[in-house]
Image (cartoon, rainbow over all chains, first blue to last red; front, top):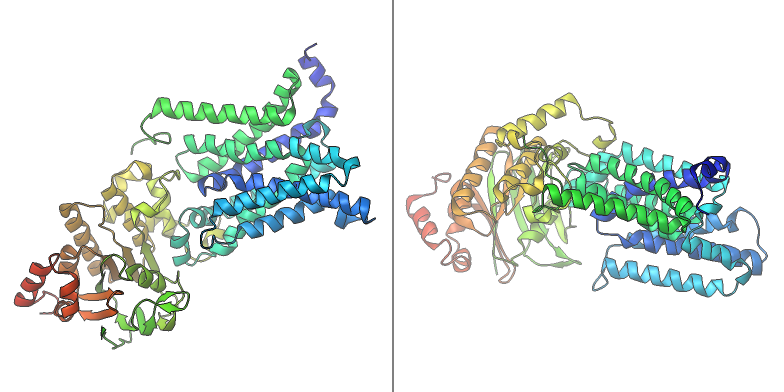
Amino acid sequence: MTPSLIDFIAGWELFRDPILCGLFAGAALGMLGVFIVLRRMVFISAALSQAAGLGVALSFYAQIHLGLAGFLVDPRVGALVLTFLGASMLRLEPRGRLTREGMLGLAYLVASAGTLMVGTRISQEAHDIQAILFGTGVLVRPSDTTWVLVSAVLVFGMVIWWRRGLVFASFDPDGARVRGLPTTLLSLAILGAIALMVSIATRALGALPVFAFSILPAIAAIALAPSPTVALILAACFGALGGVGGYMLAFFGQFPVGASQTLVCAILAGAAWGIRTLISPKSSRLAVPRA
Amino acid sequence: MITRTNPLTHPSAVLSTESLSVGYGGVPVLPPLNFSVNPGELWVLAGRNGSGKSTLLRTILGLLPAVSGTLSRPPATSIAYLPQVQSLDPIVPMRVWDIVAEGVESGWSFLKPRITADQKQRIAEALVRTQIEALAKRSFAELSEGQKQRVLLARAIAASPQLLLLDEPTSAMDLKAEEEAIARIDELRRELGTAVILVSHHLPAAIKAADHILFVDAEHQGVAAGGVQEVLADPIFHRQFAGLTGDLCVDMLKDGHRHDA
């Protein structure tokens, strides 16, 4: 039997955390996605979410086989450490014939293979790793919501405050360096924010929706926005809509949560580009009002 | 190898080099350079493709470390850089105003939550000076090449620079547009007293406005820096630009260049 709205309201206590998680993670990752998409690093969140999965697997391995306990082997900490490690490696400039895409692919594959290999040694916890890789929107815990909320607030604060510098340094790095902007710090700040949000959100929601939140809302926003500021705001709104709308779709349609959130984000991106094409078919973005 | 440069350093120079060697990975691509650029001067950085122009430009801009020698500027010298239009990503949703507003940023200024009234005034003046105020709300990606170039020039002007470096600003323009663009740059440096280094491999229009030439030739390891007449008379310069500027050079040498006369 298909669930009704009354069922949804009656079960709000159960759904509150995953919905809030989707809302905050979608908004924060959506905003960061503008930098990811425009810097042509769309696979960075995929690679980092796999790194987060490896971090979780290693944490479980340390707990089970090495008998370690405490904060340092908490799966969330493991995800954070491996994600930041991956982000710091991806920050390196491409060298010789190793392109940035090649570096991203290498990081993704090493992390994926590592997760699977470590996973075979911790079979009793394998369901956690599976959940991280494929999404567990219905099983979000209050502590995960708190972590996502705190991380999202940090990311929003940083992006809003440093917005002008981040935009300048991201899209014309040479021009920004000539003007004395701290481009290395700004680049690290964006990568750090992506690493933080991806690792925390992956632990809570799974890799698939995290990848979707960090790409698709930004694609929709870039299609419609006349300026970087508007693109950041729109991307945050689309991400939040994807997080909440996807959960509702999953509930009423009885679909997997991560896949539903991805689908809603994809629909938003498709709709935005459809509108864009209708209004200005020859251009890649919406026409801006003429002065 | 030919190396003729002007080592005289003016006390008010906005840029001075002393045995400056530029290159990659510690390997110089050009002989050492000695020159100084003073306020209000217009230098043309000339050379053929692959001659080392971009390497020298990136070193002057601080984007590449010097191999050896010194490159000095007075403290707090405001520098602006006008990149090639093609170097800016067309998919970035930027309005003209957004791009010109980047010109007023420097150092950690982005930490201030809002652009100040003074900065807004500088942006407005730059838009007016480059005659693009009507384009302020337009998308940068939708402009013509000439309009984009003016937007980037406006961004540079908004920085109130003492030293302005332009990387082949007329490369995508036809002859008439190129002459107009060079004339605009010439007018601005005269009005504002800004020192200008203009990179170009299409020389005729640039040389007409310039008072100095910085000529580089990595292939033959030649560099020459100095007044227009002096560099135009250089044999290696003639050899490299034969057919391109030959008639112009002959005319200028015969009549005397307007700045050197």
